[in-house]
Image (cartoon, rainbow, N blue to C red; front, top):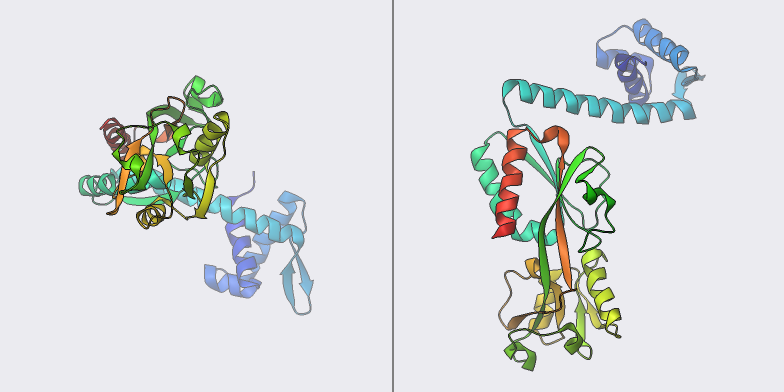
Amino acid sequence: MVDPHRLRVFRTVVQTGSINRAATRLGYTPSAVSQHVSTLQRETGLTLIEKRGRGIVPTAAGLAVAERASRVLDQMADFDSLADDLRSGRSGTLRISCFSSANRAWMPAIAAAMLAEFPDLRLELSLVEQHGQLTGEPDVELYVAESVRGDRDPAVADGVADGYDIEPLRTEGYVAVVPQQHPLALRHRLSLAVLADEPWIDNDYARGPCREIILSACAARGFAPRFRLQAPDYATAFDYVAAGVGITVLPRLGAIRLPDGVALVPLDDDDVRRRIMLRVKRSMRTHPAVHRMTALLRDVARS
């Protein structure tokens, strides 16, 4: 196994571009730095640096090793930080990934509650509209399943996947947001087919699963929405509805803080629904902040 300390020394050499500058930054002698680099080359069987003029430059292999070393060392630092937090009883950093409507509807109140209960906690929130887009590994993730039933999500069958526990959190229907003066605004409920001839406002710039659910349902009814305008998000789409440009359709959770001049009408189609999933890193299940976060998410999903 490669010594992480040698990786750190070599990364510093690549970052500074010099054995001498790396030695100064690390507080070593230049000969000690050279010895670490030579040993790393011997251990890996790779030529990592080469002389050029009176200095040195990393080879292609050296650049690749330095880049990977940075990722490995960052992960080790993250592990050390976690272990230190657990030993001292601190909450540390909680990494959360969720989609925009859950972030807008749920996360402000949950974040306030979490930070009040865990004053030293740091929250890192990533907005990801499609499950799997995030390059890192969140501690807690909210995402929309591909299917309402779950038969297209094999990880849900036994509730586990890749070191995570997975559970259904909420299944909800869709709503239409229409101008307040529109005849449909007087309806208590309506079917998706009624909207076939209406001008639509697209509200999902990311082309995520929530949009695909509604497009598939429209196709099953023999029509495609007549999109008049592309809005970047739900809130902006509401403003265009209020201006009389058209109607927009979205999951119920996203239809909050509506502007004046619009009305919300639920869709009564049983197949026009989305399923929100909760994904929690198994190694973090006993972490006090994670335990409390998941409890708050379950409570707000039920409300």
